[in-house]
Length: 349
Image 1 (spheres, rainbow, N blue to C red):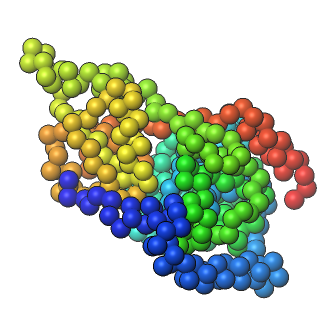
Image 2 (image 1 turned 90 degrees about the vertical axis):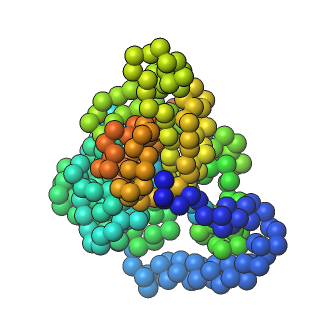
Image 3 (image 1 turned 120 degrees about the horizontal axis):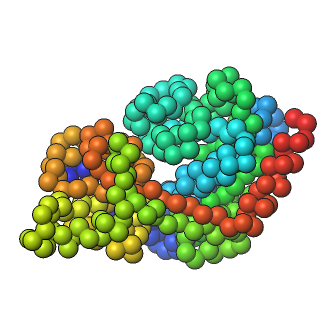
């Protein structure tokens, strides 16, 4: 496939952020300047020189303090589905990272992921909740409420550092990196100084490095095509055997797994754990754009990917199989969360 794999410099930088080695020390003076700018900006908001705006319904921010993907979007979808099950009208806002458009847009079922962002498109597709994107999240929130005035609660996918938007509850998401070497960008992975207060902390990795709630991330038992048809993972696990056995009536095309997410190898490992062993795998940059030429190059393969990739891949390969990632949060987390939300919904704004 002609799309580039993960650039080597990204892996080098991630490794540098895990410890205070030579490369991190080289960037340390620049991180001091970055930290000074972050603190100055915070003071300007606290002194009301820069304005923080709020909306008329409670707003929950789900974000991260480290650069790179940590699994926020699956957490956002789990929260939205939890509140929908309670009968709450929930909306989602996002900046729409990587989109090709400008301005405030509603994410609809027919919107191209390239125009609204792959993660907002995935959230809308999975939850059917109203989703709006804008450079300024306050614009997205106001547009959402104007179009859906019955909305009771808004979730911001990312935005912990977006101080222009008032938030009523902050949920921080961390993976196994924790806060890395504890230094600010570019010497470390931190977007802002740590520690900082958070209402709730969620760990999406296997080895949490500080207190919080552990999320369990598993693949669904099935993969889905663009038309909604499903194939059980147990059936996909038998495809390799089917190909090797010439006595089968209709041998299946070999599986080619690709992932344009923050940690592609994690997806491939989860497939193998479920008994699905693709003939080939391809790690792509996060938020990867797919092109028709690269898709045609592998027309003899059955493509299998993440849901996030599928929203961009399906217009080119509707037969591609997307495996949903299920994020399960512990009951104790929801107990604390619901206590916060009840207070917010019953308190005067």
